[in-house]
Amino acid sequence: MRWENRRQSSNVEDRRGMSAGKKGTGIVGIIVLLIGMYYGVDLSGIVGAPQLGSGQVQQSALPPQEEEQLNQLSRVVMAETEDSWGQYFQSKGTKYTVPTLVLYNGYTTTSCGTGQAAMGPFYCPNDQKVYLDLSFYEDLKNKLGAQGGAAAFAYVIAHEVGHHVQNLLGVLPQVHQAQSRSNEAQSNELSVRLELQADCFAGVWAKSAEKDGMWEQTDMAQAIDAAEAVGDDRIQKRAQGYAVPDSFTHGSAEQRKTWFQRGFVNGDPNQCNTFS
Ligand SMILES: [Zn+2]
Image 1 (spheres, rainbow, N blue to C red):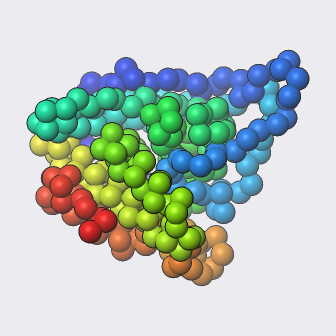
Image 2: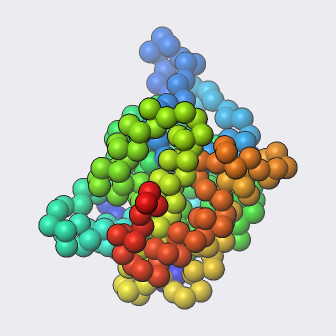
Image 3: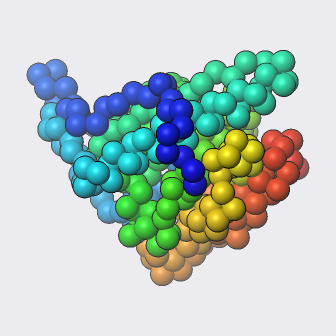
């Protein structure tokens, strides 16, 4: 991926190295985890139990140079999503409201509850922010078994931005409402469709990045490899040795690969109807 020396987004809130909790409020130690609507990869089964504390300064586990590379890469990817989705919404006669990228270490406060790195990157529709702990890059390789690479990380970010696009299009609130009337199996099925659409949107973004000279031919393999690595069957097999399709909330490796490719080949969000 030719991402260096490209525009970096300014819609970034950098909370890295910040104190994770407020001291002196009297309710130290009570931490509410993410509740209700949020859209991310749930890695808690693989990454291990969250280590929650309060008031302590969170530090990155990454070597400084790698941390800085990933920091810049994330900002460039965000900028590219702003450009491509901005154009798309403009072509529809509407405006693209840009999401904010929040960089943090360990865990952080969100409008959807407390976010933590063990949940992987996620999007919170209540505050329209994408939450990312850069150390996910290493989790993607070491814990999820992906080969990694800039395009793999870009896919993950573009997927979360895909949820933001769903939010702007009204898909997220609609599905969330339908889920509240569904049983667990139906609700999971709706969740899978949401996730696959976000994958398809990530593919649409990659196509646009290709047009802009950022996405290279060899990037496809890296991105597909990452999409497969975060498939529910792969994650469940890694965590427990077997997969339970009814419990899938994001789709299988095969489905995720297919929808990402479909978005890329068509370059058109209208071809991303996973609900039909
Ligand atoms: Zn997602």
